[in-house]
Length: 242
Image (cartoon, rainbow, N blue to C red; front, side, top):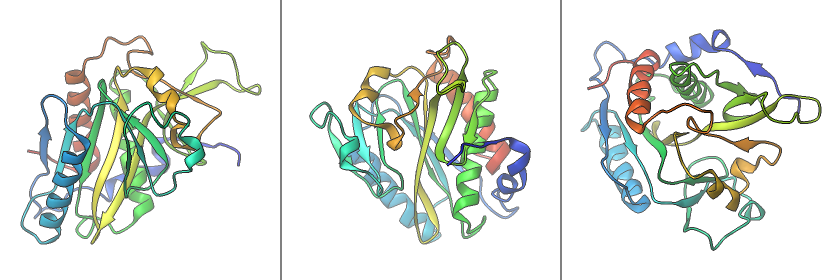
């Protein structure tokens, strides 16, 4: 399939449809300190999603860092796990294939009630991509989406071309799951992870392109800087937080 670039104007209506309703509580915004074990993250999401679905808790975005590990989504191909003994591997119910999490990468678990926003999975994915693209824009980085591969990509004109096209690297990933139309799992953005750790998998099944980070692109961005940009951009796409 030929890759197609899509800009923000193409999807503005999709993102705006996920703003808070006037009678909704602001989304709770939590930033975890230190390293969060993956099993603890899954347990937290399970409990919170059930509480949101039952009307007992506000929507939530939870920002964490994980120890180095690989996760396998529901579409994961075992052949894409090229170094199975390198880090722990977790089977997970989110969509997508293999991905890496580790120190220096910001993971945001997004627990939103689509019953009250819009029950449209594709438009929700577009809204998450818009959030990431807007975050990168705050660092003067042009993030782009592609119709044939999920995530957010940056062009690398400093690198050798690929089949006559400008080289591209992935800088942010996403994978979601829904339970009773409440979302969980979410997005990750590479701030300063050890990029060689991605070599143990074929990230999201894409062999033709590489992986990059904010620091790899030459920007002295800290995790705190990224968190501020993520929070500001989230409110532009999804509405207020507290």
